[in-house]
Image (tube, rainbow, N blue to C red; front, side, top):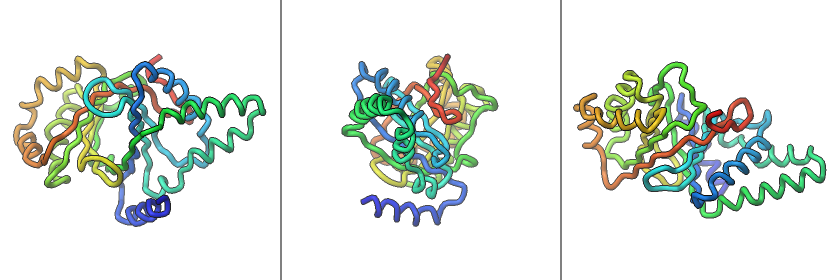
Length: 254
């Protein structure tokens, strides 16, 4: 199976230009255990960093409202080739071997507890062109527990639907200052919908204000977006937990 996925990625990479690849992992963790998972996750992520890694971004969100897993982890790569090359477990093992025997036992125990949270997890792979399908305000402070809103849809025409959403929600929202940043991605591998739309807000009040005026931003684009929707869709609201900054998992906020 791993060889098949690698072959798919190699073939897939031949058709990509400026598109980045996003791997999303969903964990179904009991809400009372999320804080413990985040504590363990920071230890494992920090131990898995090195020059060999090709991951460009690592973002963790916890569920707040809607359907879906209680934890969503977004790993961002510049290309499909970088996905193939990246091996977090190999780097973790290398760093583990450099520790004292006593410390190795301690970290190995942490790893086993952390890995137990992945039981029953699901994942998918998506692609995004950050130059065309993403927009954000300048000088955004991402180091805060911002609100991350995600919508998932199946589509008659993914490109047309994506552009309609950008014109309807993302570009006006960023220009108005209510949206910190947002965009769209399309499905490539794993369980998932054709199109995922997402935007970030500093708090729930900014999100509510954005919703209250969405029908007047661009009614033509809004109509084109909904005309392309097929079947049921899903919505989730997450809270940003932390992300990778200079090789260290930085918890959101002070």
